[in-house]
Figure 1 (cartoon, helix red, strand yellow):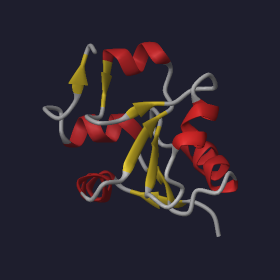
Figure 2 (cartoon, helix red, strand yellow):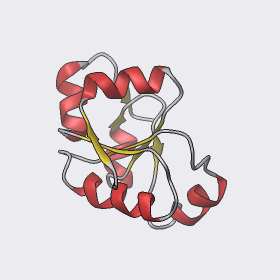
Figure 3 (tube, helix red, strand yellow):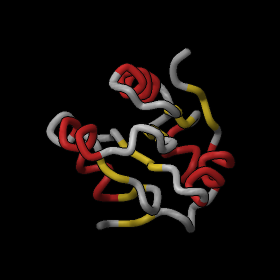
Length: 106
């Protein structure tokens, strides 16, 4: 067993229930727009994130289109995360589903 795939609708549901969303896109793209409540995760913040994370909490990885997030989700699973998901369609799917639910320019 490894990570699971999740669509944007189920991502929103799990987030409402306390799931952690991590966005692995580049810092500039994250700064321009991201899913509300998402944490930016990159090679510089990864070790600290893992050290402080609740490994039992559902964790959803978001990238641009849902491809890179699969590798990152698998990596987090290997690090001991119990419930890891890769969001199918990535940030672009979220933006298309809920354009009004995107944090702009933070």
